[in-house]
Amino acid sequence: MTNELTTRESTQHVLAEVLADILGGGADRYRPDTELFGSLPELDSLALVELIVVVEVRTRGPGAWTTGFGSIDVAKRRRIRRAGERLWQRRYKNDASVERMRFDAASVNFEATGRAVVEYAEAAF
Image (tube, rainbow, N blue to C red; front, side, top):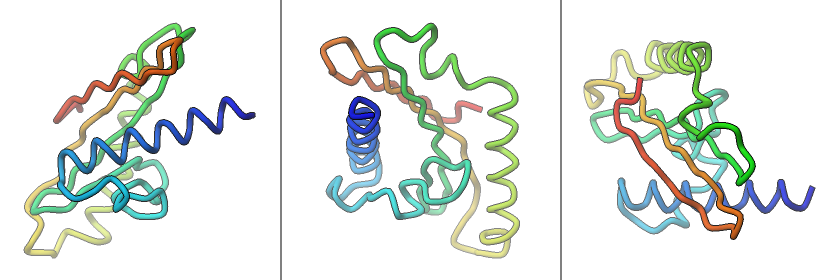
C-alpha cells in the first residue's frame, strides 16, 4: 500500500509540474481537487484557455509490460472522448470564450530508481 501511495503522490507531483509548465503558475496551484487536475470522472486533467485540453495520464512502473501510451486502448479513448463530449455539451457548448477541445495524453514511466520519465503528446486522439 505504501508503494501505491508513493506512486500516486509522485504521479500527482509530476502532473502538477507538467500543468504548471504548460499553463504557467506554480505547481502548487494544480491540486487533485480541481477540474484542472482531474476531479471529473474519466477526465484526468483539463485546461481552459480558449481551448479545453483533456489530458489522459497513464503511469507504469519498472516491471510494466507496456508504456503508459501503450495502455490507452481503443475502448479507453472512446470513453474519454464521450466524457469530453458530455462535458462540452453540458458546460461549454454555448461559452463564447471556448473555441474547441483537444485530447492529449501523458505517459509517466517510473524507473527502478524511482525517477519519473514523462512523455507528452498533444492531440493524441
